[in-house]
Length: 239
Ligand SMILES: *Cc1c(COP(=O)(O)O)cnc(C)c1O
Image (cartoon, rainbow, N blue to C red; front, side, top):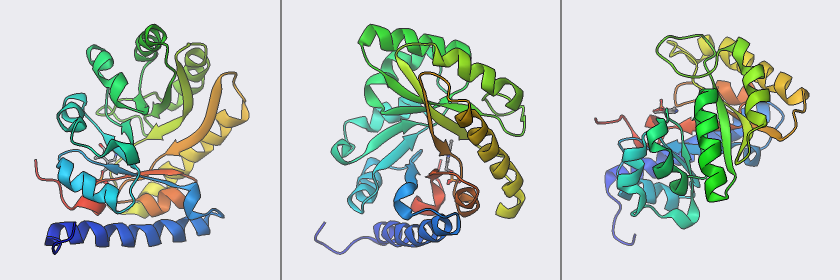
């Protein structure tokens, strides 16, 4: 882009620079480096132009919540330079559509869904990386495995061909301050380390996806290595 950047685009660039610094600092606080942490832009409601601009600023992971919305943007996205994750609940009737578009499904929230995904991936001769979604605070409004269900689900899903567990994703409750979320984020990390320690066959437990705009620094301090940021990059969402 050679002409003067519009204010909105300039804002995205500034936001990304600030986020980079904060991620670096939080990573160092937890004994890691910037490159150990994945920054994924949560792009729901954001136009392909803005997403592509963020990609041109160096962003290389994006996440969409809805298959239909991803489909509407897919052709326009600068896909060479970015990986695409599904981060929202997946209905089984959308499996066929989503598989060719994404590099990872972070939101596997039931054994039933995992089985259907597995079958379809076997048919396509692919292996799709997945994360298991953990409902850390047992919230009615959220999908995901409960704490007491997660380990068993992991053993079950590990047996399925065509998909491979790469880690855990969780969306803790929206607290007033990031510090209030620290207990959840730290608990998520404990559970992650615990399952990692079991060395389950066919499981590559290495990604902990936790932390959003309101709490990503705390999430990284508590062990997260993938943060999903929307509003802190693109500004408030307009629905
Ligand atoms: C929207 C969304 C995000 C990003 O939320 P922000 O608070 O805008 O950073 C992260 N993860 C999921 C699953 C989301 O739906």
